[in-house]
Image (cartoon, rainbow, N blue to C red; front, side, top):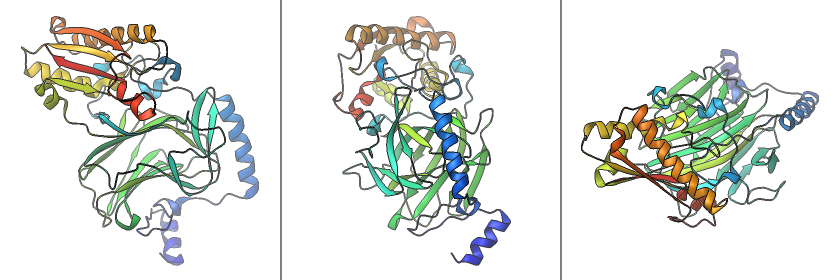
Length: 395
């Protein structure tokens, strides 16, 4: 793209996205130049703000409690009624974890072992007991190391937590790269107060409502073939039925952290799947990672609504089916505590289905196994993520 064209786009306030391998996202034309003095001042203010802030809230779904802190109300829906969550929030995490990282296995100040650096400077940071990957340079690109994965699965989900302080213009981008590392689609936040999405000629911006731009936000992406949905907290902000970029189907994902205020990410989870709940229940068993709880309690969070809504719908259509609900954890924390918590959480799920979705309580039996029935090794984050689950089985 020549200099006059870039200038024209800037003056028009348009967005441009490069289809080459050069690191130029479609919001580049909107970035303002920041002087060295301003950057230094901003960094000092950012350090002060982030050290005083408490971005330690972590959404979790049944894991050992020593790794989790209370989720923020803005991202988790703590205290909200599960059944009242908008049907537009339909994200259900994949059920086969390919990549998971909370950076607890990396040394502070070092580049994390499970990531690939393309540009910029990154380091493992810690704030209030939680680990983050922090971008130390004004612009940086990183990607997940996923050995043996030549291209993205047909069905996949991506989740991560983001934290940033103002100014935050276009601070975080997720880019899906296709043939020759060309951009197949790109989602950027914030564009004003919006999530901006572009794929070829498709472009949209949708505002994040009722929340501050800065602070902590939970990002989610869900792909079903050529269809892609993007969410921030519990709001669906992108819904593209068919990506149209000439780059072809995405082969990998890349993160861009683009701000002098040292934005951060953590709790990254990439998974294959998942199949519709009704299909798995029809076969006799559903294993789900989409039910989340208040930390150290059995309170079911509102962002569990999508999977619970699907389960309730199946039970309404099949009135003779009865289910046993079983909670499972990883091996983090004391075994007796994990066992007790898993039992209470299974009972809490049954209670929500009965009271909020009006499914007769006698159709449920509940149990908990704690960390005694792992389905993957607890020695790695991916394995622990697979073990933190809730199972539904016909009885």
